[in-house]
Image (tube, rainbow, N blue to C red; front, side, top):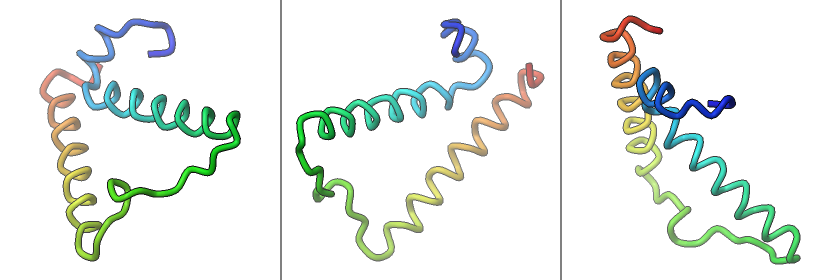
Length: 77
C-alpha cells in the first residue's frame, strides 16, 4: 500500500483499504480541528449506547475473519 500498488492491496487484503481510508479521514479531521483551534466533541454518531459495543466488536471480528478466509482461499500471498 505504501508503494501505491492499490490493485495488489485489493487482491491481497481487501479489508486493508477501507481501514486505511478511515484512518486517513480521521487523521485529517483531527488535524484540521487542531490547526483551526476547534475542539472536536463526540457527536451522536460516535457515541455507543449500552449493548452496541458488543455489536461493533462482533461486526469487526466477522470482517476480520472473512478477510482471513479470503486470504487463505487465495494462498496468503
